[in-house]
Length: 357
Length: 259
Image 1 (cartoon, chains in turn orange, yellow):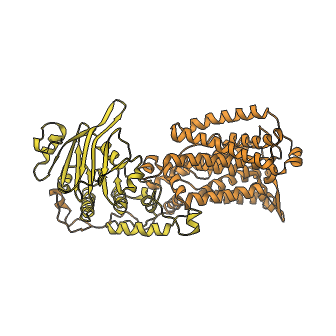
Image 2 (cartoon, chains in turn red, orange):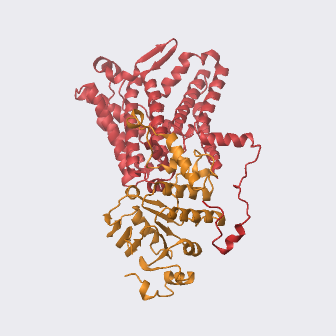
Image 3 (cartoon, rainbow over the protein chains, first blue to last red):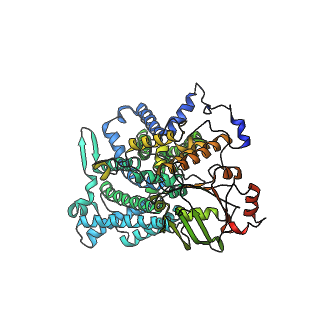
């Protein structure tokens, strides 16, 4: 652009001889706090990572080798596997500025379908498992349809779906539990994710490995593919994303459907974790997944955060839960501290956003 | 007279009982800057949205280079070569400049990584974005990976215009590009507009700023009550004439009245 063009408007004559420098307000010595704020703004998973390291250090100092053993640390992983997988489903929806309250219900219902199809109808386990995935994905698709096409608020859609799916779950299962021994004898594939891999004192279940692989696959999809960019753009400003050429409805539908499929996977992993198929299992998966997402620094207002943060968030909760239990405290202290962490995490999120001001 | 590159005939758009477009016509000539002016609520935005695919008109036809088009999404208009810079800029604040420039048309890596795993070619996109921004003299932006929300209003406008200029092949539509800008930044955007026109690209400029309109426009389309009232040459009329036409204070002479 030619800078020297003669001013076309009378009042622009005042511009001749004006400063041509870029306005600069950068002070030389940025304070440590300001630099930290900027670093956190560009790396949203940093806060939960630091908190995770601090909490590991804290309980390590308090409990010593009782805590810092391969067995204990991998036990934490086992205990957060379900939360981590459901949290991954929750993360996708939260990044689009939605919320998914039916994750826990979809998970349990999918596991019940996998179990009951095998035992009530005698369908081979692999096909029953596929049916479980179809049910999970189908419910997710309906959620997506209601949010993206009918344009209902995600909170309402998934609140309703939570009740519907949970009720369907109890009605369909007739409140029956399929015993662990029966599954082991007749359909061991259902318990696949309970299989253990022992390396020294460390015990990894396939469920843990599934969680880690899932998080890394989704992290790749969110950061390295066009689909991922679109998911963030929708959470940021759906109107702008639409005008910029993002297929908002299609992307939203895919997010809710994938989220449902991930919940079905969580249902399968759940069978491996508890051994049996129980319609009353996983009652707290909803709230735990939202907790992991929030502590993981993913903004409930959408468009910001990293799925790795969610994984760290889930691990923080796991570390606190197990660490406090090993210390022999009342379990209520765990809930109290997690409550504090949630509020702290959202406060940090708001503070980081001020960089943009 | 040359054939218009973009025409619209008898566009109608109703929102419930509100009629935003009432059999509106529109003509854009090759290589010109056509300003669209009109009072608030005259239907300028609806007209532009119909042309850019953001809304689908209830009636009427739009032709690009003589061929009838029926856009149902902004994506289709973009594929046809019509780029729009919306008043709200349509940028995602938390994403980077490069991400925003390529939103909806990302480049993928070559080979298996791109085809099967959909991996984005971030290096190529960053390079292209940097080249386009410096071409338009917007290199006060140091970091192409910086989030758009950390830019000033003028810089954001610059990114949005650069995006349109980089990808638009037939028509560029600018909705109120100088509305939020200071004197110096407005000047930059106006120079930018003329710069883009000098490459032969026709531009539709929607603006309330009469001095800006009269400075850069070749023709002025006056929109009133959902339709084209008249098209005037800025050399033949004054700003107060134009304001009088668009507010209904004065009737335009017969020879410029739209059919």
